[in-house]
Length: 524
Image 1 (tube, helix red, strand yellow):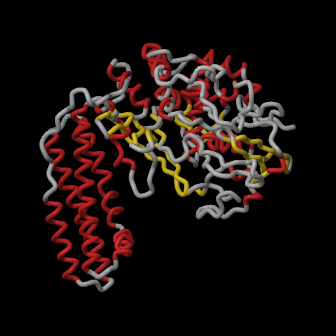
Image 2 (image 1 turned 90 degrees about the horizontal axis):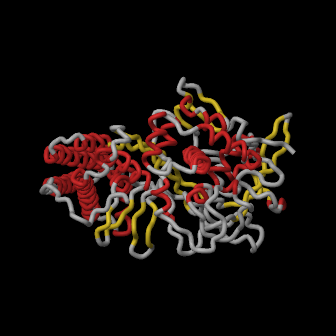
Image 3 (image 1 turned 90 degrees about the vertical axis):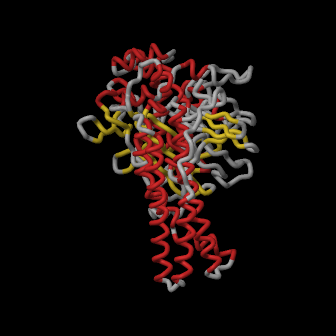
């Protein structure tokens, strides 16, 4: 039986500070992180999932950080204590073998091999019998042979991002699986100058974790990562025992089947079946630290998700502001609460912290798209409610202009005699919203930082108003040109443009926003 020890074998894709791309072992990554600029994989799902595994190891090995003071010591030194991490990996090394016959890493050793499928099903970007055909991959799934390192990376990502639905599809006993915790979710990751800083930035203090979740009495084992749990994952719902358990949640029971080809070990097949799920009553926001949430009146707290037609910056307030005002409730990622505390205490003095946000959106079981965007976050605005209210006003002005643009084009469609059933397709086909929002994105970040630097808000708002009006006008002009080329009546198009100008002229900066006393909640 082959072996692949993740503690000592290279498998984590790293961009070094000298610019070289290499694969490194867990031991190398966690004991010499200053030499690694960042973990980077072609799949953003793999990149995010690997960070969460590393964080689970650090939280468990260090049992911390306990509070801001302990974190500050590590940040000043530039790394966490290496000795406990090295000892921890040596102690649990037997649970990090990818092909161990008794307890393979992130897998279940006793799955029925009659349900073998191609290993390509573990990779979102590869075509398989589960999601084929994919637009960007037409390979034969049966011919995909993953190296042990690639199989390990895809396995970690699959446990975090896999879609719901039937898996083996061969027996009624294999009931539909729930989606993994991060499927459809926008996951935030703070980035530092090197991997040590990145992991420290996302290593949230224990007091922020302990107070946010207490499992029901009688749930059994203490909070442990997946590899420490006494038993492999089951196929039943259960309550997470804590943050470490949640970070390494086993949403699928998987068994990789290695074989030797041309003298090297590869993985062409795997058994994939339903794993553990959360019970009714569990709220993901109680344990999740990297995701913003919004409260829906009917469905409760929902994680912010990427949408194909909506750029991330339009939801920027959800990333940096917690709000509880009647029907408007949202919770920013808890890591932002942590940074706010560190900033207030003078410990974290990074002017702008890069916030990477990754997400994956499927259509049922078929992948549609993923995104990996960077949001430069000035720490000075996190708790500055006046600035956040001005940012809200900027966003509302842009939304108003977008609605005006659509309303005018819908009216034009009616004037052109287009039936009610085709109006929406007519407006969508012109692509005006896409053009409008794309034009605004670079300027929004400029305005954001002007506000964060303390420039006069009314002046910033006036400049933004001009950019919004011009962007809407230019988007309409592109649509008008396409309509004229298609032989549409020029006078009707000109009348529509006049209506748009009138609507845009009514967009104003408004009065200076006032900060609520008591309704705005920031952090814990």
